[in-house]
Image (cartoon, rainbow, N blue to C red; front, side):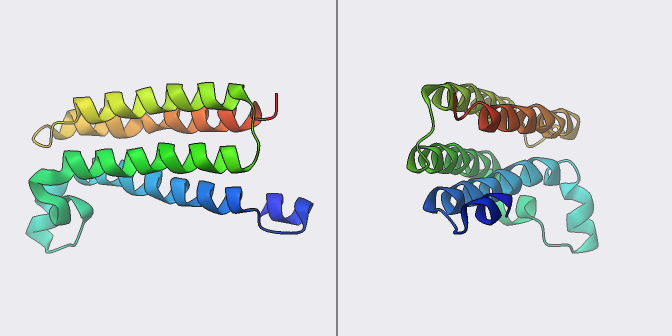
Length: 133
């Protein structure tokens, strides 16, 4: 919203980056959903962990890939520098590491991976800050 206020319009790059933000949120929220999937099932709740079942790791990977692709494309559409691209490579590696480590049967591990998204957020913020250098 600040971007739009300053520029007076909604840039296409901002919309594409917003899609990436939503994809990241669905991805990390699904990681957390596998922490308490048994409780959700017992209570009759609808969660992405229940929806995705044993395909959760693949689905999370797809949402994380969409995150990186959208943020990268949005940056490119916005004319960002190579430092932004380098930051996106680091973020892609971090998210790929998360997907590699996910074990749908180990809630304690998934909780730690969910928490590692704090680092993802810091990396995204830092990458956005250096995008014009």
